[in-house]
Length: 172
Image (cartoon, rainbow, N blue to C red; front, side, top):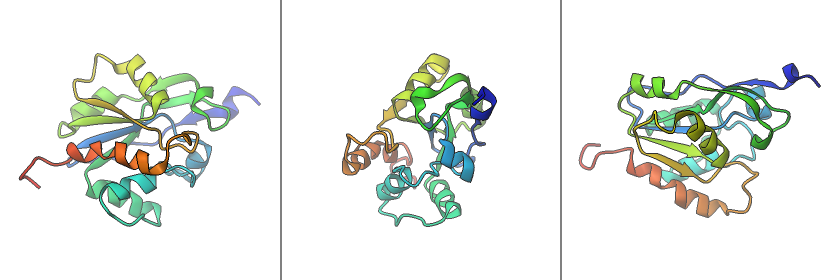
């Protein structure tokens, strides 16, 4: 197969003026790209973890999933805008072009922290933006099924730090 057949382009960000945190993945996998849905692979734990943080039932449709992150003032995007990737593994990503994350953060100044979903996304973020982003940047365990060594319950526990940046005490 040619590189053109493995060319990937990420989605537009899910973000609003009320967003308080930004969660960055690396690049949507083949199934998510096919569905045009953030974390669209059914084996990914993202849409199990985020509702669990708020004791919210797991949404059944993509529109309800997006409504959930908007409700809790979570923005979604990816570190990578385009790349070449045969298959679903982040380790096979090549020729990456980053999204304009510092520009997004300037446009949405209410974002208080950046959370990075997994180590590959963190390495790509640091390579591109280490000294450009002045907010707290926190790496979370990957929600990918490739991160099977960590139990789901532990992932949910570690992702709980997201809640700390969503609300000012007394200003809900």
